[in-house]
Structure formats: structure tokens, C-alpha cells
Image (cartoon, rainbow, N blue to C red):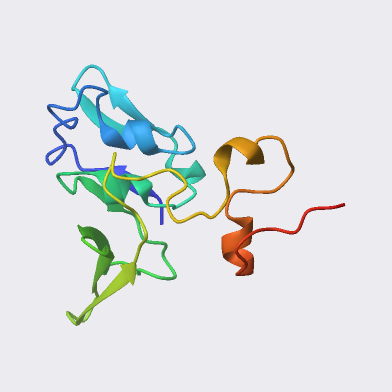
Length: 148
């Protein structure tokens, strides 16, 4: 379900020094700033990978999704909303029934991530070997074995 921006709700993330956060976060560079109206928009919705990073970051919940016809038939609607622990999806069916569920997310507030937090590796010495960050954590060992 590709995203689109509601121009009535978008304020181009007023106060953000880098401009609209959706433009900053979109991994496919699909979200852009329309200079004429100073609003964000998805320039190629058909190329949207549906990661919803823009939805998670939008402070005004201006980003909506277009449901696929087989999932959201005419007259129905689905809309994600940001929450502390993920995305809350509101689904409204054609017959008026509603359904709500929350999809958990590990997304953290911008600027709050501590690089290598919880990793057991030594960042400096690991630059000289071929291990991947977090290898020992995922394997459940204190340190990785080294060749003799």
C-alpha cells in the first residue's frame, strides 16, 4: 500500500532544519518537497517499497496509504498512525465495521540511538578483522573465536 501525503495536514515539518522528515528518511528517495506549495509528496507511489518509515516519522500524521483493491475494496479505508511502540492500523470496512491493531516497531526517536549499544565487540580492534557488528550477540557468545 503506497504512501501519499495529505497536503491539508502537511506543514513540511516546520521547525526542522533539514526540511520534511519524510524526504530525509525515505530509503528510495521518493518523498520530495514541492517547492511551490512547501509540502512533501511521494513523486512515484508505484515505486514505494512500503517500509512506512515516512509514516513513523511524520509528526502531523499527514502521510496516508492507498490500499490495494483486493485488500481495501472501494468504500473501505486503512490508515496507519504512529504510536510509542509501533504503528496502529485503523481499518474501516465497507459495511461500517472497524478493526484496529498495532504492529510493533523497534523504531527509536531520531537522535536517540547509541551506536553499538549492547554489542560485546571492541569497535577499534574489530575494524581490523572480518567479523560483522553484533556477531557475538546474535550467536550468544562473549567473544568470537579467532583463528590460530
